[in-house]
Length: 68
Image 1 (tube, helix red, strand yellow):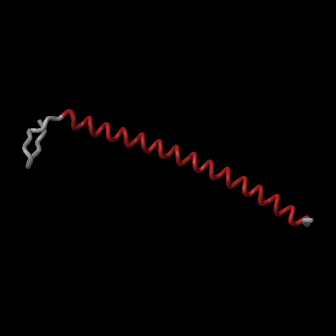
Image 2 (cartoon, rainbow, N blue to C red):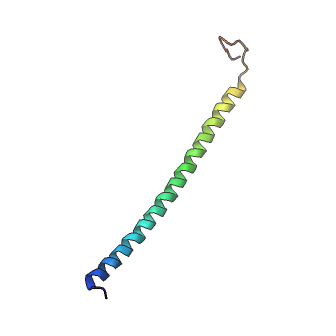
Image 3 (tube, rainbow, N blue to C red):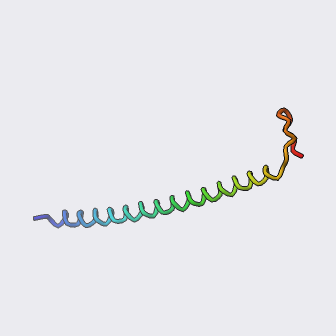
């Protein structure tokens, strides 16, 4: 039979464990949202970069690579 103190500790440990699980899930969700946001920003930058260079025609000269 458990003592009163042991019962209190077990209840407290279960509360702490539950809170830790909630915090882990929240952190995981925030991480996924941040990764998605970063991915979207990177795609926008790449698209902008690609569209910038696709508008220019190069003279073809390797040393100067002038765009006309």
